[in-house]
Image 1 (spheres, rainbow, N blue to C red):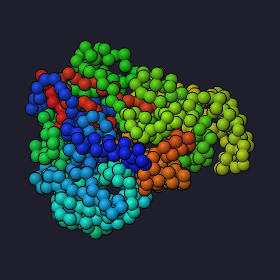
Image 2: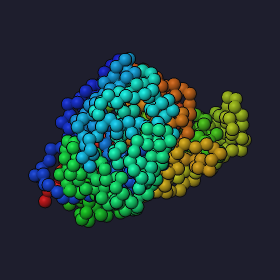
Image 3: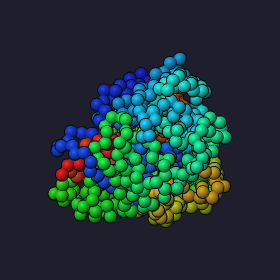
Image 4: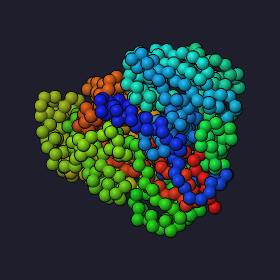
Length: 605
């Protein structure tokens, strides 16, 4: 998800050990030992990231809405996915104690998956059953092309059929043998049972039926729910969104992104909410958020902008504790391979490698990030500690080296003009020439739109403009809100007007949330709904497939992607430098997939 397990031998054992370890979790995901006595009732207010607002409630999103803000920090409060990611130790693993179902059972050479639901209920008292899983499956099958997590050949294409054994047991029959860890973590975790008794209809005034059981009906139901989800002005009043199986009900929503949840009194899962209300407060800039935080008036859970890290002492004197929030993801910005203007440029690996060699990550970590981050040169996170990342990716095959960038360009037919604009002087596809689709005289110039509101992102992009100019690569910068930028990130073709963008940096990267095993099939596989850069490479597809269908390690995949630079890797910051009020308890550890569990929180006087 935007800010978004397949192993061999010993690595596979390590991954499964993590899975097993999660089984012993206390079920207190997001909780910690706390001082003070839990108080029933009260309100806690959390500050949203600058320019970021939740704006999609139906849990089957298109790429334009596929973000942490919408999934982990909005939808999941009310609508639980089949498997909960994140345990009481802050690891990105399944926690069965907080999941709707027990861990799946695989049989017949990993072609049959049996899932058994626990005893959950919807807020209207109706049990959560396998019919609700089937409802999701039926909608997804017919409308898969619009689902951001859909990848051709993967779920639901991999599902030959399903069979409801009883109200609590469902069996999935797959078209091939799949790695169980990958299938659990990156496929089953996407499934969100939906309230059939309230949502299986085609209009607001229509009766509930079994419309999802025919392709035409499933399409009509999906279109209705999608239209209702886009009508954000009704979020607080629409009865559709009142039937929930999570611990929170949405009671107020404003177009600015202000969200107010009320505890669901009929929540049937563990960790019953102690708070009465939970509020998400939007901010247009991180400076505006800091001003409210310093006032000590309304925020219980905020963040300290990296550029203001020196102010943590002042906030401590006001009763705030500083806790860096380490996310499970990778940071980068996008190049559009289908751009009619710059697509031919970025399709050349040497151009991408040259640009990567001009990104001074270490200076960014020590400068704009004030040390709250680490270098990041590939698709697999190096932090938190995990069994997947390797040293090759951590050190980076293309560290900052302007001389390397200049050589890559001159060796491939470019006249490099430092502090000017480099141009192609040797057109063609032979060795030493610029490459396919690049005409003589073509300039190395790009437009780059980045997320507004965060000072650090702006500082990084201004520094990047200067660094790129050392090899004559021109960046023309502009900014826009996060929601505006990610609305452009649907896969496209060069002939489409929506494909005119060249580079985009929405100020983050990817959090492995609904896909916590970091194989990258969502990000880089040809045709993936979240492959917004339109990257396509046969070897990448082959390596990804190996990690899905076999117990191959991630090393070959991650090292190849680090070498190829399909996106421009940026240093990985902490998700945020959290500032937690002394009156708010139960917050720690913070979720590695950047989710929220306010049902574990309580306030004291």
